[in-house]
Structure formats: structure tokens, C-alpha cells
Amino acid sequence: MAAPDRPAPSRKSGRLTADRDIRRTMRTGRRAAKGRVVLYVVPADQATRAAFVSGRRVGNAVARNRARRLMREAWRALLPEIPGGFDIVFVARTDVEAAGMHDMLTDMRGALERVGALTP
Image (cartoon, rainbow, N blue to C red; front, side, top):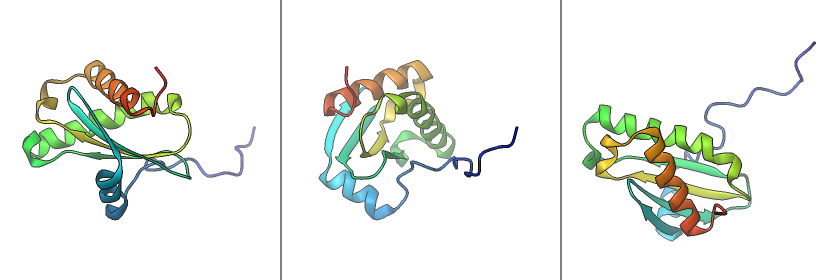
């Protein structure tokens, strides 16, 4: 059986990558904090896009990269539950180092529910 003539989705599809878009979302978006995550949400016309940020307060480069990987993995699990189009920026808090996947999923789901981007 032949594969369809459409390209496979890129790992970065659905990502908010432009610095100006990330800053706009953080400046004008609704903010919600839950546990180890702060998120900013702006309604958008296109498909839902997300960015993952972890600053130096989170720890060294290894800790910051782990925090972003953890947030991305939790986001992949939550994405099918998100209706409509949003631009979302997830920011890791300093206590993210002790978090596991279940903790991150719970915190992100709670924050998304607070801003109305996810139905409870």
C-alpha cells in the first residue's frame, strides 16, 4: 500500500518559534500559574501553536533542557484536548527540577483549564 502524497508532519509543526510572537503572547496574553508552570495564552486564527521557555533560574543548561523536554512531552499528550486555535507560551518555574511527567501533565492541564483553553 502506497503512502499518501502529503509530507509527514515535522517535529516542530505547531510550535511558536518567532521571538516576536512569543513576546507578544507573553505581553498581551492571559496568564495562569499552576504548580511548576506559568502559561500565557492568546486566541489565534490559525492552528494552536506552543512555545516552551525555561530561564536561568531553573538551573544549569541540563536542567533547563530537561524542563523544556518535559513540557513538550506533556503538551503532546494534552494537544488533542485543546479546542480551537491558540498561541500558548509555557514557562518553567524554578521547582520544575523535581517534577515528573505526571506532575507536569497535572500542572499544565490545571493552568490550561484556568485560562479556558481546555474544558475541565
